[in-house]
Amino acid sequence: MFDNPYKDHTVINALMRGGILPVEIRERLYDQWGDLGYVACYDCLEGRSSLCSKPPVRKFLSRIAAFFGADAAEHTFGCRAAQFAVLRAVREFCDMDGNYADIIVTDPNSHYSTNIAAEMNSFRVVEFPHDGYPTYTFPAEAYAEQIEKVKADTGKLPALAVVTHADPYYGNIAPVEDIGKICQDKGVPLMVNAAYTGGVAPVNMKEIGASFLTLSAHKSMMSLAPLGYVATTYEWTDRLFSTSRTVGSWTGRSFGKKIPNIFGCSVGGLPLISGMFSFPFVEKRIKNWDEELTKTNDFADKLEDIGDIMLLGQRPHRHHLLHFETPRFWELSKNKREKGFFIAKFMIRNGIVGLHRGMSKHVKMSVYGLTDDERKKVLDAFRELAGVLDA
Image (cartoon, rainbow, N blue to C red):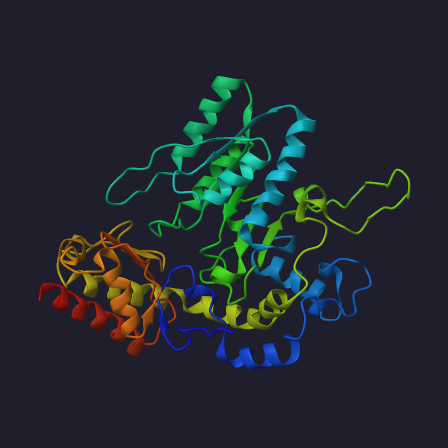
C-alpha cells in the first residue's frame, strides 16, 4: 500500500492546475461511483458509452458540443486520442478525394502528440519558424505561406492545418481566429488543439472557423485522467464519427454502433463521471478568465522582481502557463549537493509541488485558480529560495 505524499500540497504544475477537481464533488464521486472500472455501463443498451442515457452521457456530450460551438462531440481517451481520431478521419478523406497532399501544416510549438498522431496516419508534418527567443511567437500569415508552399511543391493543398491554441512550452496564445480565416479562404480544414485552453478560457470553434477541436478534460476541465473530447462541425460529423462496417467472415458478427476512430467505445469509468460532475463548474469558471489572467501577470511581475528571473513568451501573458528563465537559480544551485533538484525539493519541503525535478535554468509553473493566500505562499517560497541559494 502507498499514499499520495502530496495530497495536502499546493500544486503549481501547469499541466495540473486546470484539471483539479472541485472539492464539492470529490466525496460524492468516490462514494457513489468509485466501486468499479465500467461504472458508467450498468444500464448501457447500445454498446457504446456515448449513447448511454443512465447516466445521461449522450445529453452531456450535446452540452459539450454546444459549449464549444460544435455540432457534435465524443469523449476520448485524452486529447491525444482525440487528435488521432481527427487525423484518421482526414487520412480516409485524403485517400478518397485525391486532391490533398499527404501533409499537414502545424505550428512550431505543437505538442508532440500532434506529430505522433500524424505519423500514425502516414502524414508528413511541415512547420514554419517562430520568432525565437524570448517570445517564440508566429504570425497567422505563416499558415498562408506554408499552405502555398505545399501547393507549389506538390500541386495539392495540405490535408489539414493544425494550430496549438495555447502551446505547452511558453503558454503563448496563437492567433487562431486569423488562422481560421486563412484556412477557410484556402480550402484547408483546421484542427485546433485546445488541450490547455478549453475549459479554462472561452473557446468557440465556429468563431475560430475550425473544423475540429481537440480537448483535454484532465488538463483543463476539472476531470480525472484519461479523458478528452473531440468536437466537430456537421460537415465532418459523419466522417469523424462513422460507425463500424466490418463483418466477421465466419461468425457474421458486426459492430454497427462502434466508432473506429475512437477505438469503438471510449471511457466508461470514473474519468467520464468526473467530467460530467465537474462540467457545471467549468461553465462557471471560464467567466473569470480575465481576472485569472490579471492575477497571473501580477504574479509573474512579482517573481521577476526577485531579480535575474525573466518570463518567456508573450507579454502581457495571455495564458496561465508560465515559463521563466532562471539563471539566478541555475548559478546558485551549482553549489548545492542536490544541484538542479534542489529547487523542486525546496518547494516540496515548503508544501508546494509541481516544479520539474532536475531543472534550474528554467521553471515552468501555473498559479491558475489559487487563492490570494496561496499565491503569496508560492511567491514567498521563491523569495526564500533566492535567499537560501545566496547564503
